[in-house]
Length: 107
Image 1: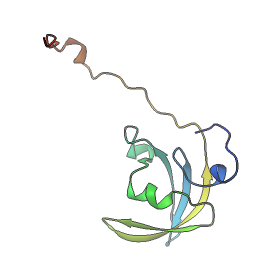
Image 2 (image 1 turned 180 degrees about the vertical axis):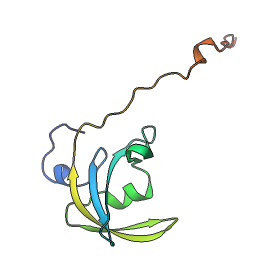
Image 3 (image 1 turned 90 degrees about the horizontal axis):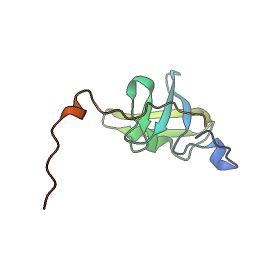
Image 4 (image 1 turned 135 degrees about the vertical axis):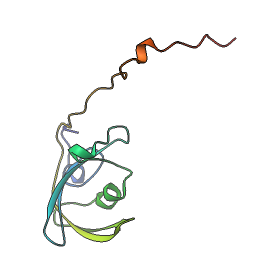
């Protein structure tokens, strides 16, 4: 995501964006839009397929979007959009997986 971007791609929300937004009460939040296999809600990494990410897509600073989610409808204001490195841990096999018996090849 930190690769240089030009035009609208550098200022609007697309895959890989870090987005700061505020709700109607003024409460701000920052999320990063990642792949479905990189979601980490503790780090505010959300899937590009989530209702929130879909509401934010293609919007830019100053835009207002409507989030339609199972919990209700909410208006959000986009404050800032940036593209920066998103640290993601590389996949590691779970402990003990290497000792699991392997199935014989099918003939």
